[in-house]
Length: 230
Image (cartoon, rainbow, N blue to C red; front, top):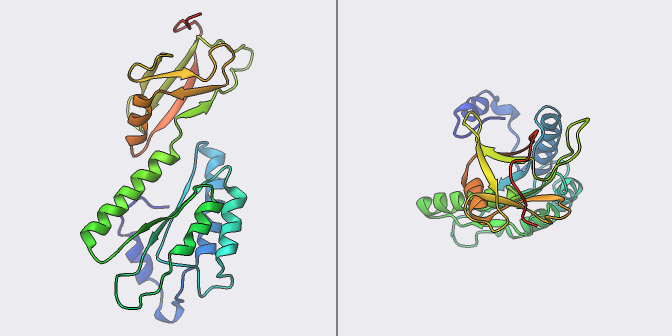
């Protein structure tokens, strides 16, 4: 996996002999490879993963080129790995075929409801629309609530001794305070009497979802950190 932007792709393409080139859109192969990669990564890097499939059309020129097969794969992992779809439409020339409408089937199967379709023809606007689609996906993919993890071995859960922090890799983590009234960067329990989930307040949720790379962490303190109003 390679962070973007990167020149690595040009080097890989240049290394393929002309006689070995095969055209087409290998969507099922790409999705299968990504699911396997995520399964491997999850073993050493637990966390929330999602697939963002960016394509200019339907699968074609491969042993299995059906939308249905891709949708079945997306549906089989949707609970653990949602699939988001960005369809890049053909430029607006006469008789340009519609190759993106049916991509919605993959998005629905992947648990994300709809494909985001980007028009082409104006490169500047296309770039803006793509950035907007990525931001929209980021906001959906980063959840603003999470289940309360199990307490460390040998300890019982104390709902007033919980610390919630967030931060990007390599940066200092920022603590969110508990506030059932949601004043600013804060969080609260879904049920103060018998909590099962931690929920970020709107301001904190907006801050977290605006980050390009962020993780949420829940830690258990040895003593109470706040008091839940009775």
